[in-house]
Image (cartoon, rainbow, N blue to C red):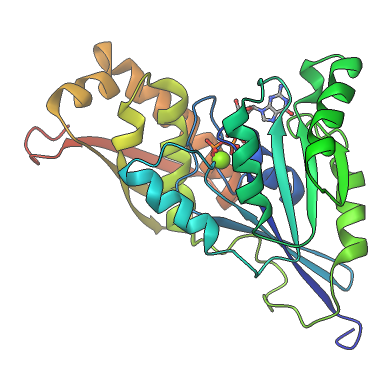
Length: 285
Ligand SMILES: Nc1nc2c(ncn2[C@@H]2O[C@H](COP(=O)(O)OP(=O)(O)OP(=O)(O)O)[C@@H](O)[C@H]2O)c(=O)[nH]1
Ligand SMILES: [Mg+2]
């Protein structure tokens, strides 16, 4: 097997909210990257690893690329560009329900510089008519030189296996980078568990608060159960009250949704204890 080993690095880039994290989860068949309806959910690059017979595929989910480079966005675009020249294939994911502005077209030019093999991924095809889809495909392909175009629904898994097969045809012969064949992500379990809770906050709390939240996680295990304690660090006492919600309803919902997902990852029963801490470190709950 060593002689025939193939290993490919595939970056997943595109605009915020286009479905990049949904796609990496669909490839890996596990929630390794969090998903929400809000833009800029993914804050740092996350690798998803799958092994198929002699092939190892390493996907890199990246934070959505945007033009307005505020302080924290600079960091985000840098982490995308760190992948420059290391990927064998770049999947540029476009949300077909969003209108493509001129500045988005300019950004595509930048994203194509990351790699020599670029695939155009038209995502969310479950939401538009075929005729509109073909128009979008033509519009983009007339302007840019993509190696191939794929029309998929990352959420429903439509077209994902076909895309995977085309990727397998292009990856180079070289030794596997990750020797442990059970490893599905480069992130440790503490990161994954913290991210799950961050996802629930993105899904359940409105506006800007989710962007400022940090999660601290500790975990221990006995014979019967994992005991996980998480501190949700927020900037202001007012944010803390919003996360806790009326009669503690919000935090309860965050906790029960997070626990279910964490149990899926750990494949074990979990006791999850959440507390919310305002930055002043007073008023812990
Ligand atoms: N209907 C539909 N919704 C999708 C599809 N793919 C993703 N979504 C939804 O689009 C939203 C954004 O998905 P994400 O996977 O978080 O998008 P992203 O590109 O990783 O976003 P950022 O990390 O913020 O850049 C979520 O609400 C997903 O459920 C799809 O194929 N069809
Ligand atoms: Mg994402």
